Length: 156
Image 1 (cartoon, rainbow, N blue to C red):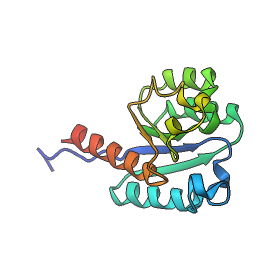
Image 2 (tube, one colour):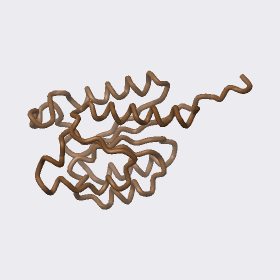
Image 3 (cartoon, one colour):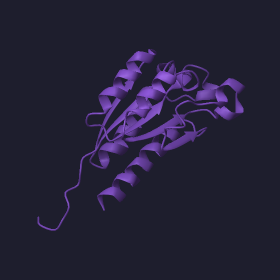
Image 4 (cartoon, one colour):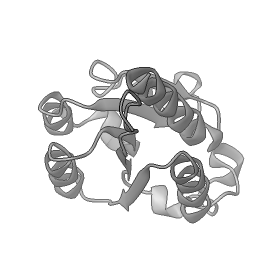
């Protein structure tokens, strides 16, 4: 219809780094009992109920995460990422995010600032549009909700 803007379908990428495939079984006192499949399902429900799409990937290999960020340059509106331990070590992953122009939201299940000192620094945070730390797996949904809010504002 004339005068009514079309809603743009956004493609969102959910990336999880090393050891996040063990969510629900690895240190449940730190990371909780929800699995990565649970996280992906809840974020997918939220994103798809708003009319957008979600692709979810997890890898213990740095180069795969970098490749997915590179691929995201073509058609991905936003990335929600929990880089796992690569948060604190990967300049290469930061460089990949710096070459990506969409939204980036960094998520950490635990409060990394209450943990070992080496976890206090994130290479990714300097590029992230938002950082959610210490909210458990609910942090992924918080990131998704913020992305949906920003998309609605851009649409309006």
